[in-house]
Length: 205
Ligand SMILES: CC(C)(COP(=O)(O)OP(=O)(O)OC[C@H]1O[C@@H](n2cnc3c(N)ncnc32)[C@H](O)[C@@H]1OP(=O)(O)O)[C@@H](O)C(=O)NCCC(=O)NCCS
Image (cartoon, rainbow, N blue to C red; front, side, top):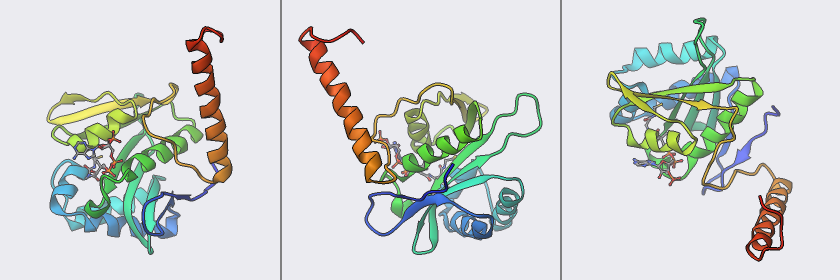
């Protein structure tokens, strides 16, 4: 996948793009900035500074892909795509963290979409997501992308089948104006097909 950066439409000059290995310290700093509740939600339990230091180092070493929202040189939101382990039924795992001051602006959704594109590019068939049973925000985000979370041992776990086309209620992010134009043409074509069908003039879908 071309490592293009995406502007988000949010106020400010932030962009969404993959982090390079040299930029991985930005992930550590972002995770360390999470307030205690968010940290607990992100790691589904206690995570002190040394845990986060080791965690960020491991992400750097094991080939985890980080798609981040970067504004003024800081990562304030990140999505992680962890490669599958060695077990037979191992699946790649994903995780998200959005700092509180930029939440509920659609960033989690933008990162999710971009992470799915990365996972498809890598040829993964499915993704696993695990979160705390009480984590309504993450459950809402995961449901939006077709994950069916089930509750077990205090955790909600689910998977996303990448072979199916995800049903998403929001508009896609556009990398450039040509993408916008293509999407609008597609939308108009579908709209007119619908109108023609309503008047009995078009083929059935
Ligand atoms: C979960 C999290 C990543 C969501 O990020 P976000 O940028 O706020 O997500 P979005 O703005 O894209 O919202 C996604 C959807 O979830 C919904 N949502 C967000 N927060 C919610 C909440 N607290 N309760 C219920 N729904 C919520 C939104 O309404 C939106 O749905 P919509 O598009 O149908 O309106 C963020 O809350 C977070 O980082 N939490 C702390 C860390 C964490 O819990 N990580 C998950 C463990 S993997």
